[in-house]
Image (tube, rainbow, N blue to C red; front, side):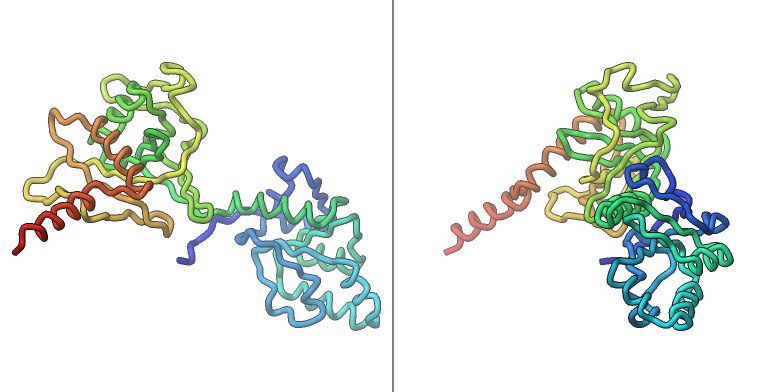
Length: 317
């Protein structure tokens, strides 16, 4: 899988309301709250105490310690224990979290304050804390991209409309809404990748609004009701609307299946020429229905090609 750049969030986000379920409390290192978290996986720093510290990485939440690791530390001479903890802070890690009400040692608190490394503790069990943190970080750090376009739900299929400004994306989307389909966002599409799914939504400030030249800004939800909109939709088909270019060859048979690359994933892709008098919304409905048929294993163009091939074979002596 392609290695995608991820977002980054400051450590202070761990104190947000979204993580109130595990009630993280800052114990030390407040000056380091602007350090950046860049990876959603939680690392267990305690395991590194018994071996090499080279696997510990910046940009991750470090979880420490369980009873076995605490027991290991307590068995070490004080000088060795202090040297090991000091080496841990030399890695310039991003932050630490202690669970089950286990307190940080005085040396840990002192080094964290000196090096501005945030330390958090919570009374909640390790499993619940790791699950909540992982879910939170996966959401916040997922690969993202913002595109100029329109996202529609057509027959339950997420269709992303691309094209130059003024080509008719918003007008086609409005016609689709009138025909009973649902708008996700117009003009700005915010896309996040989670696993092999690309989910699109719109900015909260302009959600469900649409700009129509000559008419101005309208609110689709207010005009057509809540059934005409939805907040998010997985993107399953990309259609580019473009003014027909003389001499350019467009797909006629549908045997080829071009794709559009988005955040490392390939999506079915259609280039649709726009000409005066052409009903784009009906063509988009047909494109969505056709894609749904392909997902069920039926490919009309390939089926016709197969039947033609069989007919040719039968006519041969």
